[in-house]
Length: 461
Image 1 (cartoon, rainbow, N blue to C red):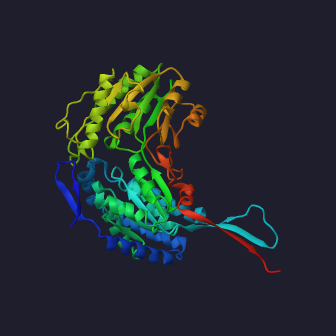
Image 2: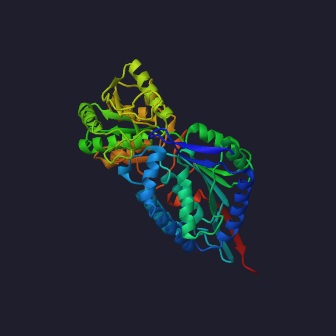
Image 3: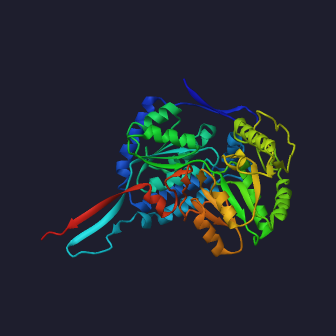
């Protein structure tokens, strides 16, 4: 029997092992989802919301078990708790706006004798392929609005965080969600590709690498299913001369290194106006040296291991290449087990960097950041746009109008001012270039999880 094993980054042990579903079980799950969805679409939106909120409370009730479980699976320190502040905020908001976001759109030019409108109808069966880095937050972005919109959901979670899928299943079961509407499946890559190419899935949402996104598109080719893809990122920050320095430093250090830098919208490169460059770098170094790297089950630890050793080795390679090309490492923190082949890695800050170095061009997804001095907005904008990715960009200034004007010229899905690394569920979450396609959260997220159906009704003459 084929199984999937979770190798814990904490100590290299096998934390959990689960059997891969048989092809027959996968086919049965899809048929069950289709049958359940046909009944679910008749359920009023308000009633659907009650199930979602009950699921949320069931999930939150498992916090004491889930927090150490996350640490064992992917290494996030227990001191930070679960992800349920964000899960609660996003679930509550998407439930709250559902009726308004899903209501029919009436034709803007009424005509006597006609009733004309567009309904937003559910897609059918939605598949969510969720990542390990924020295993609850990323999954809930699609699971809740897809169900609220009237679709059924099949979840395939990342191998590193398999137990998260089970927790969602437990929560939905406890909430009493009709059988088959939400199903968690353990599948291998070949089975996933086969299912996507079968024509039985109506929409897939995938969060992961660019290579993974291309594999999803290839597998789904010819099915005409809709896609939501959030892929790589290399999110920049620009610190202007008038920035509130202590605020910028504290938030950008956190934005770069929280979750060991394994954040879709984490800060990976910083451009600082020459007038405040030295002050910013000095503060950034001091703040970074406060991190305590170690066992994530220890309350004193503020940075745990990366999810897998190969991810840490990539950061080591990027650092070594940058140093060979003239970069300067400013932290050089020594921590236990920080060596090739280990997931434990200290945070690093590099200066004297440029865009010939992979650390400033290619996704790092780890605790390393490069800081560059810039002369003006034009230079900063050009550098921020010199990337194949575009998820978020943050601008640090006291001038809101200037931040908005700079944001207009940055190729990105979200423009932040004086904050970073956060998803506001009232705003759409989307990306440009190799970061992917589609949109999640907000009312626009509902548009991406439904299809329009026009009604042109002429009254009897």
